[in-house]
Amino acid sequence: MELTADCFKNEIATALKSYDRHVVCLEKIPEEAAASLKSLMEKAIKAYESRGATMRHGIALDHHITIILSQTESEQPLCGIYFNLHSPYSRKPEAKAEPTRG
Image (cartoon, rainbow, N blue to C red; front, side, top):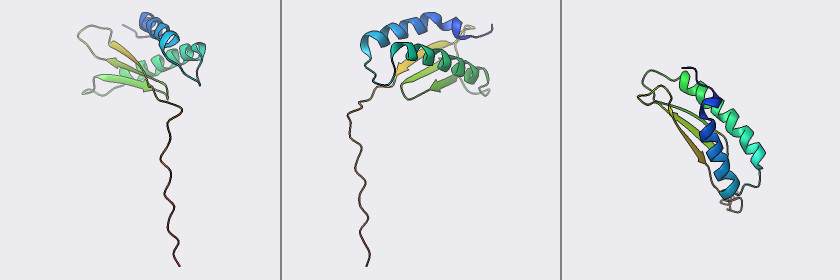
């Protein structure tokens, strides 16, 4: 069986529906999320097909989305699509100033 992004169109559609309804993202509108999902799915498929003999997963991610394809007993792997949630308002720790030497 040849894997393509279209093999996971139901999973992608469900993820996009959830993204549109629940995820607030200041950097990606839903149309950009759809393009990212398709691109990441293709990368995850390549990673899955080229994995080592002892590996069971193919993973692809960007700053906002992670896709994991996991080997199963059937021909088609399981597909997990996760949204990497974070707050754009969270503060990064301030860098400590180095003491001056004199």
